Length: 284
Image (tube, rainbow, N blue to C red; front, side, top):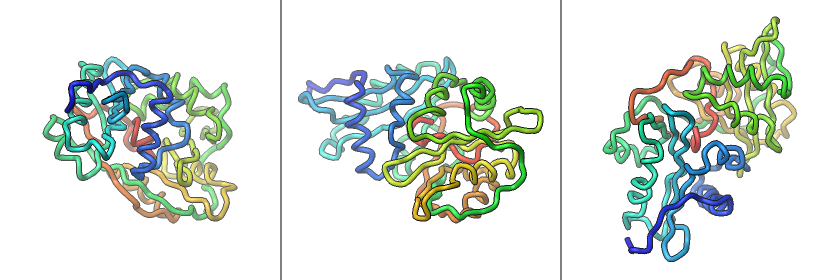
């Protein structure tokens, strides 16, 4: 590792370059994901430079005083095996001081995270395919998300995600080309919501949160309604939730990859039974 290697906060243009790397690596992030996530914690998006060029990256988003999520940890192929990844990791970790850190590890890298004190919790399994058109069950009223719903969706989301993320959701639910749907019970209370967005290949659903399997199925139907017959959809399903796996397979999706959710401390509490699809593997 050369002496001119530095790690610093990434600009929007820097992060566009990093996202292009992930596309080449086959991660298939959603288009425009960074525009929604970076404002949550701009200082948590870091790049390493050597000779003035970006050679490494990591995101470590501090969602709250108690929780952070690590993602986008990679080194340019031309510089792997030179110690730059570890140097970037060490530069980033102080940003999450005192917080439990979550991440999704590809199988080949799991042992490295275990060595750093991370503990496996469950696998997030990506299911991909052309979704089958299935009649939606009668599980409540599914409608488009409006600004009126934001506070209630944010409160619901806080039970399914380890931190409050109202500001992020205000962007995620309304971003260009994102389609968001909310599930309401007869009294008008939120009992689930979901988002589908374009990825660099096909579309990705995330999150998909619901109180019941029927509610999750109704949201899935609403999110995929009207897609072209050849549209390919992916959803990242926690493997500790059999009903979530059953929904994905019932709609014709099959496993295409998996990562292991790991935490640096005790796994934070969430309503795991309501999580039918994670928001993203890259940013929690």
